[in-house]
Amino acid sequence: MKTWQNATKDFNTIVKIRKVVAEYKLMEMEKTPYLHFRIKIWENDDGSFEGYTNLQIKDIGDKQNESYYCAAGKGDTEIDALYSVLERFYEHLSQKEEWTETDFKCIDEYDF
Image: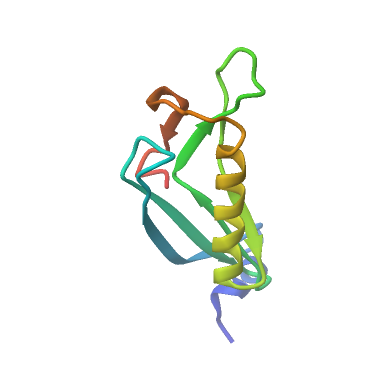
């Protein structure tokens, strides 16, 4: 039977396939300079879920201040993955008291 999960078996050049199952638009007005950011959740062909934000945060451990952190998470369900992403996002934000607009970078909409 043809299923999206079997495409990796049916086409030997495809090594992994994921299906977008949700995109959440969040409003946050205290920690970030942006009113909105998004989290996208995928279901993997093995039934697990992954997600990440389109808003990246400057990596405060990078002394040259050139790298950014993208909150990503995993879970057994869509909601578990969403919470995993949010926990990592806010965990990173808690490492510094005040953030400025230059501490954030958005992933291009078309890449996200």
